[in-house]
Amino acid sequence: MKKFLLVDDHVVVRSGIKILLSEIYKPTDIHEAFDGESTIQKLKEHQFDLIMLDIQMPNTDTLGLMKLIHQDYPAAKVLIFSMSAENIYAKRFMMAGAYGFISKEAPLEEITRAINIILNNRKYISESLIDKLAEDSFAGNPGNPFDKLSPKEFEIVSLLLSGKTLTDISHTLNIHTSTAGTHKARLFEKLGVTNILELNELAKAYGVQ
Image (cartoon, rainbow, N blue to C red):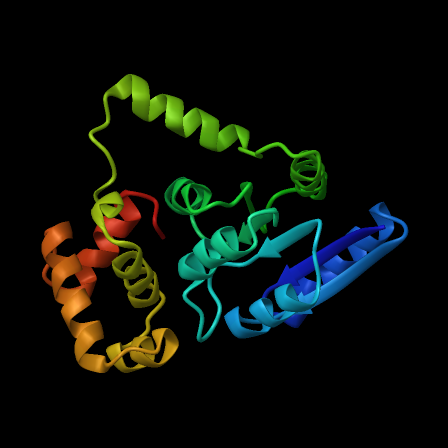
């Protein structure tokens, strides 16, 4: 019996994937979580064959969660399942221990393929990401400026781009508002931008949005 953990704050998304998994893997045992805290609780109680993890969830530092899972539960296989930009997030999350990254907009056949590849103890990288990495390599691309950010700064960028205020960010990441402001100032300096409008333009240019 395969045991899965679906981590997403949207009930509709979890329900859809649950139906897919139930049809493909019989018998199967599917558990659900909606944020970092509920995910860790589930990991303490069960051992899963695969964890499907969303990136954008309330009150959750998802990159930090990924690193914690990799450190404390090294046998856990995580597939990032998200609407966020693959060419920006996939590399970062796979370096943190994820086995693969797939878009929620991917065809069911591709989602199923990604799951099967990871269940067979292999890493999943989509064709589009392979093409992008090859393109950057041959073009001598000096690198994405967002790669210069620390994990915390990158998480704050993601929240800023989603329209969150510093107060929202401080609550989500459980840090002081002043600390969030310091991170914001530092990442703005690293990226060479002075306001949210410029940040949005830079993000669009590098596919972060």
